[in-house]
Image: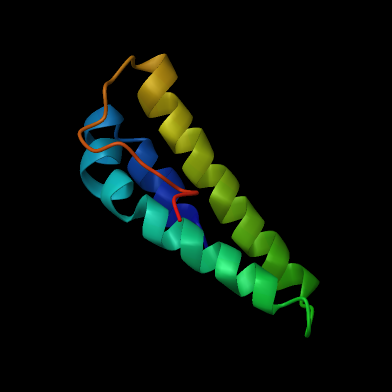
Length: 81
């Protein structure tokens, strides 16, 4: 499910900044919303898949910011109201 995130991140910091960063907050919020809605009808495998995608996204962003010392073009605000 999250192989695209991992694949794009392997191309380096420019691809993460260009392709993952613009959509990261939207997908993060979508996954969180779906996880909250699933509390009424749980699906452990689907929940695990979404958490793994979140982890892949965080690892990619970590690589962009810390390993490559890149200043991102647009700051992310995951928890903004």
